[in-house]
Length: 298
Length: 273
Image 1 (tube, rainbow over the protein chains, first blue to last red):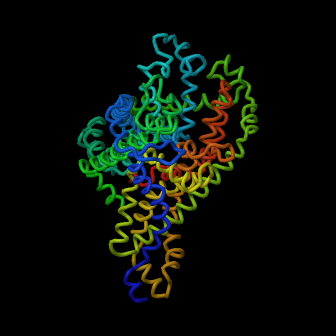
Image 2 (image 1 turned 180 degrees about the vertical axis):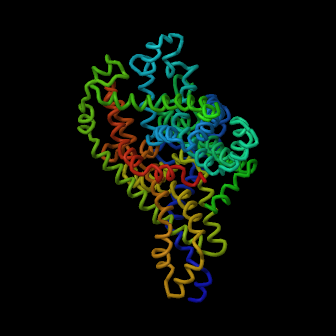
Image 3 (image 1 turned 90 degrees about the vertical axis):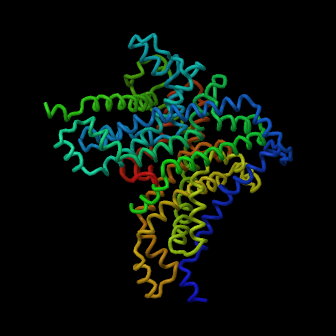
């Protein structure tokens, strides 16, 4: 018996506490949510079976369809905005010059705030009467520049995407900084001797060698966009109208404000499925799985 | 000419623009939190007035310290639970053999892809079934559960690099698995544990959705949710709301000043390098 245990290595029982907690609060919910999506549940009385009612509503609910569209829009625009800025600034602050490290120290400050704090701050900063933005545009005589971003259905979504970028660009910048610092200096020296200018060096050396970081960062942006919630909930609550009501927010409003948790569960199932599919798809396409093996050497 | 070229003027200019985009809101937040309400409505928002701590006093009067205590309890419990459980699991996965060990690891990897937002309704359901609604454990358990996958991933990757000879040497000396875990694996993985601890602590400290959905009374209120509530409570007294935000961020900011590198490593835990 004892010799047997030695051959087996450590007891797998050591993983039990972690596994138990994880099973109850992360895996079981994935089963429960599927079950709840076939019920009528208001959060207080017991759920009762209603068949496909929630799912057929999902196919016809135009508000939810609009929310899916908003989520996709946020996903694409977030990637388009965050990637180039984070990439360029991340490479910029990977330089060891003193002024760059001072700038970097400030760039990372948004990472210290909670989404709630960032949301509340920006909401007040954008107040059309007393906010900083209104004051600045007035002061610079930029009367053509809109001040009521959050009250305007045509503009609110773009402001939300900007605030999300403000919150998350520092994180991706950090990834790119770390990635760029791994590139051996000798490669740039060789390129310089060959007479390659800075732009050329960036395109021919930095960009290809940052490929893995670009993939990691992009996956995180795309999958993360699907699940943005806190910030939008606080800044606009989905409004004005339905202008910024993204899918997780549509789920929350249906589940906790209208207490229709059966329908909200159906939306949740779609969210989980979308997140898993997108993750797997991106891993397949980009070879993101290599991220693990490259990690093992670290 | 060459030297000037090396200054990278477009880069520096873009760098300064982004500096302004980041620094202005933060500066405005701090300066405004030190004003009274009249000052907020009339004064130049960029010029600091005569600083007053009135808003900070006000925030503390309306229960800030008890929310701070709740947030500390939640953060501390989550970090402790995640560190102990994840280290045990990682050790079992790395040192274990066969399909149980690899299957466990794969399960946690899969967990990385589960979005917390999509799990909130079933978690609400389960927390109610367990009679935990509106208690601090209702926040602690799910937060810890969702921190585990990344913690296990980081620790497994770290422990894999510990040479097997070290374990063998201890085993020859008659050490049990527990002794090897606590006397060898734990001290060796201190840097990884620090990273995991920081990552987990930030998530627990800043989390908003769980408190929003799983608690309601003031006795279980934590800071991010308190900020949200202050917004309605203080109404148009914006300086008070901003003072609360400054106070909430202060501990993280102190950590940033003390150990910037560790904090930033903790933030990108598992994704960089």
